Image (cartoon, rainbow, N blue to C red; front, side, top):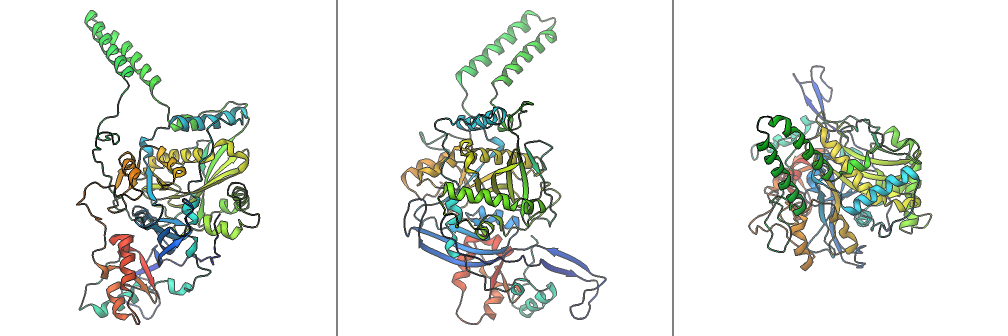
Length: 561
């Protein structure tokens, strides 16, 4: 794994305290008549642009360009909105490639699990796992080599900005009470209006292969509309038109016609007793239809194993941030799997994959744990999906559960089980997991796979999970991947939205409304700008706001020293 700088772990700062009192009280004393509300909020420290650093995809020494910020705390809704604008996290660092400048453009890709059907190669991996569990067969099938790790370069590419330690004290990150903030804002009340203060697994049902062993409570999350999906009719030869019904095999059409004709003939010949004939014909039709229906992922994953099965596989979902007791109990075993993985797969020296690197990279997360009534039983936030084989961990998928999606962060596994194609298998399990969560949280219906990099052939396999969409880097709308691939063949950077008049609807419109945290006081940027001493930082704030969008810029707190 690429070089990583040591980062001091930051303790989560206390949530903002909003007080609503029936009558005033002196000083900072809480009123017994008052009502105390807590609200989690996002606090970020903008790092700016970094260009000219090494790329792990094309081996360019100075080709990468990206923007980043350190997230001291972040709500799941804010992160959902950020990844819908091309951002991605590595630990607590959140970054976004500058698509029209970086050597290998990285397009956010999402799969649609509710409509997903496994391909032949996917079924081969699922069948191989079943055969191994049932009979212990570990033979490797030709052509089943594991693809290049899907998230390694995504995650470590940003390590250049990780500071040796934070120069911000914890007291600076704790906003003052609302009364004190309001007092500062009312000083400029004659010039501007007061800023509004925006408040911002279905449990796996006793299915043996996967269990959710954590349930953490937290605040509610704010819901907003997800990024739009754009369907445009492709030109001839440029991909499938997803607005039309999928093509059907001629063989199936002939069978249907023959069955329909048979039904008509028998009905006419036995007009006196149609009810005695039609059920038999319909039953035959239904049985044939069911027999011809393709198998789903669940048909492979949740199939019952024989009583004398050689192995038993269990998948457990444990909350990693804040760490649950189950996560703490398995931390050392999980770390040893990661260490072996890095040494065998990525050729790290024995002293390289340290516990601090593992913790900072794959355990630390800025996401606040939230558990609203309408969400999945395990809540939202950051989790480790542990794969237990015969009582020991053989793989761990690092995931974020967000309001509209499951976002895959990283996967590491015991190299002794490479023959099981665990990269593909875990992706299929995460797609099935998303479907399970959707049963409780109806808005959670996407599976984000990180970045799709067409200019790197080894990274194109993510496009094999269909149907899937790519995020337009200019208008931030989703476009079916079939419509994007032809243009990517001609240019590594592309605007996927074919409507040339379309613009970024979430772009920054009022810079003065950006929320700032300055000297523990939350205020609009327009007010902070008047109080700031020294050179103007407007260009930096403008860049930040344009990349996170108007909604996030008014909801998140941008730390200013």
